[in-house]
Image (cartoon, rainbow, N blue to C red; front, side):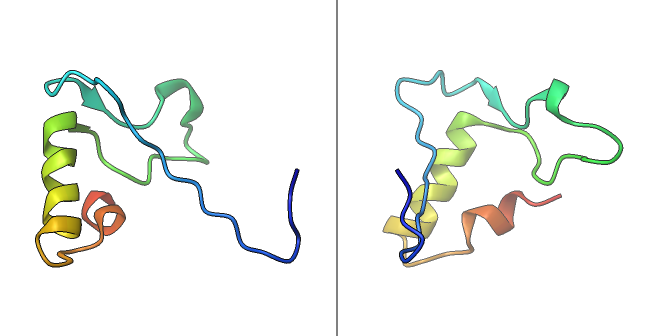
Length: 68
């Protein structure tokens, strides 16, 4: 069900992910017309960015830090 009068925000969360696992765009969804917008990184590095932003006094936006 959608609500045309109210904005919706979705947040991707990872539970129990291997800290050394590399996460990033799914390769078969990328093309020359639709290239990756964000770089790959290890899960532990993403957790560090989350900590710096939310617990560490609002550092750089996470999405901005991952942009290619």
